[in-house]
Length: 533
Ligand code: N01
Image (cartoon, rainbow, N blue to C red; front, side, top):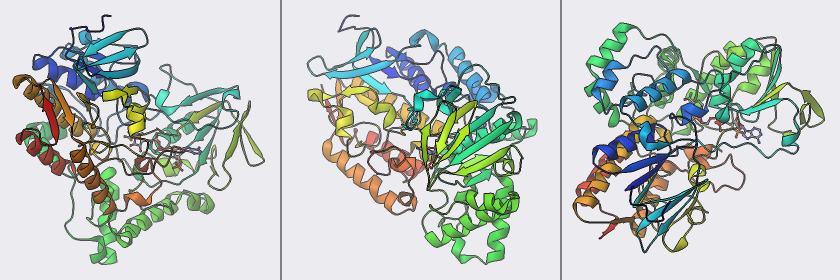
């Protein structure tokens, strides 16, 4: 393709929920946009994460777009929490309904992107083509760069092995199989109970015990759907202004101020409701170590109640991080699964996995034999998906070099030195701390309006100013420091990837506060951006 291909105003990388809505938004505004997607279909996270038990832990009725009232009224969810196949069906429906596929190239990996200062355009290189556009918008997700530890002998295993984030499209049959699961994060906690029901034997390798809250999933009744749909506009508007984009009953008083019996009664009630909002019950849970310990202790008590074998229960009790500071997990029967005869837990905190072997894996001097190994070992989160593309800005500046000591962005939307590049749910935005769909819609609409502003005012170039970026970065760090989050060795902190700088990457100031800040910046003529003709 010609280097000055005039066909596109914008190139979007990724056809998940962010990329699809970005395409629709730009198209509606009269821009010529095109999406490159490495999968063979839309869906992003929900295209790749096909592991058994994969399910979203944001409620269905809110884990969907709000931009079209017809769409949100007509689509029928079947359960409180949507399963992966149902979310993928929804994504495909959206692609068909808005005729998005004609502007998406599937099976296409974006390898590199470079800003051509003279032309004021981005040149994007895929496996077999070069395309240019004035604007480049990344919709690559925050948890899409899978992370498989570099265990010695990793390629030698003779059985089947899969990462949860790259699960095969065909069903994996565990019947009669010996299965090893490495990791105990959200993915593993969902997959283990389902695999255990089918496999002959499941061995779980746990480095860090995790706090998990029951999903209390159930089929959605027609009344429940009707009630929410009748009030959608108000509920959505309210959710957009909350801390996390999720409606939750939040108490105004602190956990440390209530009598023990009242605290327990409240958490019993929240446990019965289930879901991620458990830690949002009291305002001090994620700020005050004493308050946090009350909730952590409550969950440890539940683990001891559920798990029959005391030694296994103790091993499953987290002690090394405040509850909620590693992403809280939501499960169906996770802890109870350890009461099954065919499930065992191996502690690898002090004696790590030393090798993958042809027959299985080795921990210290113990060899384990498996037919299947499931790597539930997570992601190079937030920066990984961007850094794995060779992105070069003005003067050849490489994004991954600029971010060598941690990501630097203005609002998580743009980075100085990278004109006309916009990052949907980038580091420095609420993203992973929120209902992603709420954050995606806000970013997409903000970027759409920004591009319209540039076009209407004759600007061809928008670049975050270095000082605005610095001030924003300081603010992101300052609000994180007021919480307990930086105390955990979490993927939010980059701690799960060897050598990755430890910095709290998302913005924890709140979805509502952030939205208002972005709105004010736009209303003030895009303060902090250099706009040039
Ligand atoms: O990944 P994780 P995930 N040796 O990073 C372990 C979202 N999500 O795919 O904690 C041994 O949480 C690692 O141990 P440690 C959600 O935001 C949502 O489960 O680093 N073990 C950990 O136990 C979630 O947080 C949903 O000590 C190693 C596990 O592997 C995010 O995705 C469902 C290891 C990785 O856990 C990621 O979740 C699923 C090593 N070398 C995912 N390296 C829902 O909506 C890593 N581990 C419900």
